[in-house]
Every structure is written in C-alpha cells, then in structure tokens.
Length: 137
Ligand SMILES: [Zn+2]
Ligand SMILES: [Zn+2]
Ligand SMILES: [Zn+2]
Ligand SMILES: [Zn+2]
Image 1 (tube, rainbow, N blue to C red):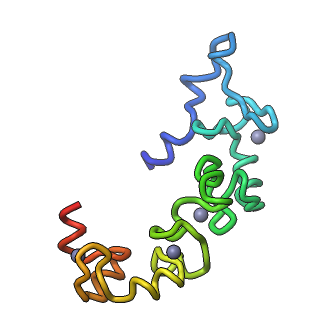
Image 2 (image 1 turned 180 degrees about the vertical axis):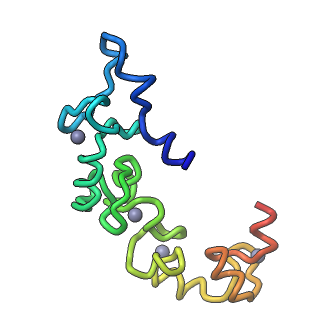
C-alpha cells in the first residue's frame, strides 16, 4: 500500500535523533513515533486519528465522512472537500450521490454548466459538465 505508507511518518527514519527536529510525536496526546504510528501531515498518532475520525467533530474530522482534514474543515464549515457541493460549497446528504447539493442538482439538471448542452448522463457523471467541456479544462 504505497499510498498509506506516505501518510505515516517512518519510525526508522524519524524520531531517532535528539533535538526538536528529530522528535516526531502526537500533538494531541504526546505518543511518540516509537510507540504509535504518526500521521505526517497533522502530527497525530494512530489512536488519536481513530478517536477523532469516530467523533466527526467538524474540527479535526469531517462531520459527514470522518476524514481527518482540519484545513479543509475550516474552509468548508466542518466538512471535507469530498463532502461539499462542487458548485456552491454547501453540504447536504445529496452530495454523496452526485457531488452536488440538492439545490444545485436541480438547478443544473441535465445541462452542462459551461456550454449548456443537454446531456444528462455526462453532466451527472462530470458534476455539471459535458464530456467535451471536461476535456477542454
Ligand atoms: Zn495521539
Ligand atoms: Zn468528508
Ligand atoms: Zn450546491
Ligand atoms: Zn459542455
């Protein structure tokens, strides 16, 4: 799993040397990299990640899917970028299905947002754009 490997700090390469730079530890509970895996981007240990993901507090973890993404949550009022409408930035239960909130799905309907062509399958699949306009972007 090369993708998850990158997310976690490597205990064989980090946290071995002395000094502030050599220390890799959880910013929340203080676990060091030698006792728990540390999520690189946010300096959180695996236990805190699990706990926070379960909480879905909208500060550390997305209120909808539980993904840890504090920067995105701040930007989108408690939701990660996967859980907000790609057109207006709001969240509702509709976004999971189409990538758009219910209002925008209705508004956009079967028409491409750029060229206005009617192509319901393409528009739904490309979140509001027809295949031709997606390729142009
Ligand atoms: Zn922790
Ligand atoms: Zn989310
Ligand atoms: Zn919307
Ligand atoms: Zn188009």
